[in-house]
Image 1: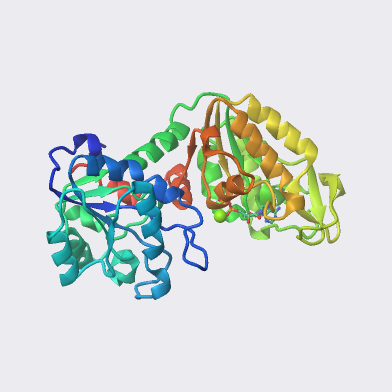
Image 2: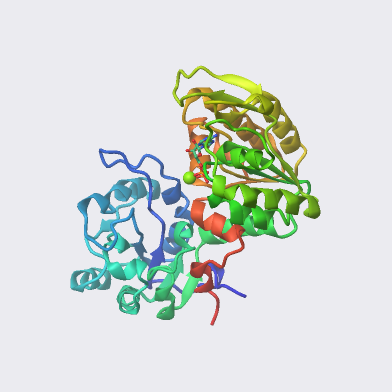
Length: 396
Ligand code: ADP
Ligand code: MG
């Protein structure tokens, strides 16, 4: 399996290159981008191509307009952020295909950057319709995919388009895959997975696949409750997926055979309601009962997790340890993140809320080896699934 990368892309002076980026960034009510890392991380590829005199036509989706043209989903908010980061003007179009777009791209000069309108305004995008893919492809001479956040989707601008143009992998996608592959192949040991978040049903595939590789799986967040229930503990009124208790039991049994240590909280922070001034108790798991709800891992558990993290050489973290959005329940997540930040080994973080927690607690991304720009994409990869966008780039 070999993908062509930017190293293989030569003599591009004056060529029109279609670049699939992921500018699906959070935007506030005033239309300002509140978190620009997806745009920032597309810069190396954009600059690399511009420096060689290419003409760039950027394509992205934004939100879920579901094939309709909706003003709230225009890509306009990304423009000023990109211009600022790039230090040059770009041209944003209000469509992504059609005569006018054709005319504009034909008139482009070396070093010009055009941003097409949200590709999901067209039903052919998510449907991966061949006609739409062909129309997009007709705008350029070469295709580069650097939209890691959508690499797990067989969409026209991700997958179908590669049928029509010589296609290459961008630097961001290459870098993401490098770190994620490292987690699957020959990680330095001890290798620890820190797994939290809301729902166990979203994480089963991931746990099942990663437990074959890891030495420790430290479990927190809502998903810990289902595991604790599987061990026979009363979790009160906590979030707990009753229909997944059996799967949790199966995972615990399989872990013993694989000699991976799944560690569950031995103490927890409980309250009856989630709020910023909730009355909380930090109690042993055996003492949970009645209308108590588990909203964070307890202080002894946090210490134990920190100790295991500090002796690990490879760490993958997905999912907050508690309801970190509320002050009384953020301690487990913050301290675990701190221990990961202090680790000198390979540390990889994936998951929208986990990354949001890092921002909220003001961690500098420099302290981590890699923060994935694609929650769903990175989880799909680590579950062992094939990524349609990567498959489409394989040399034919
Ligand atoms: P990620 O996006 O990083 O993969 P998830 O989407 O799986 O993470 O889960 C994040 C959510 O899980 C957060 O909104 C957080 O408040 C919630 N959560 C964490 N712990 C608990 C808990 N004990 N009970 C309920 N929700 C929880
Ligand atoms: Mg999430």
